Length: 93
Image: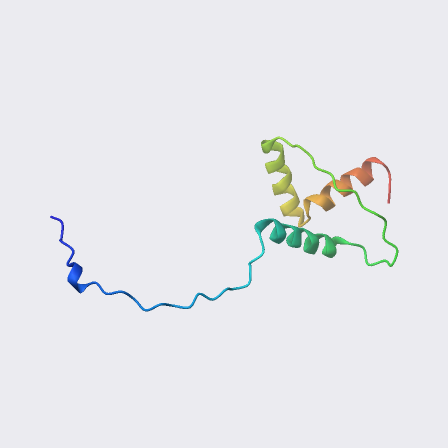
């Protein structure tokens, strides 16, 4: 059974001021900020820093899951893990 709406009980509200709040950062900006913070932590503290190159890897989901678990167990980041593997392969300190 539906209740009938009594229109006589409805009143108009008072006009409210619309305050313009500062624009919140977009998701893209938040992601870039997080990425910068992560990479700042992993940067060497030496005064001389070599230029870096960003790389993207396409990895099968099952392999990525195994790598992620392994990296988590070792308390490393994916970046540190892959850099360590590359340095071992290239016999770099």
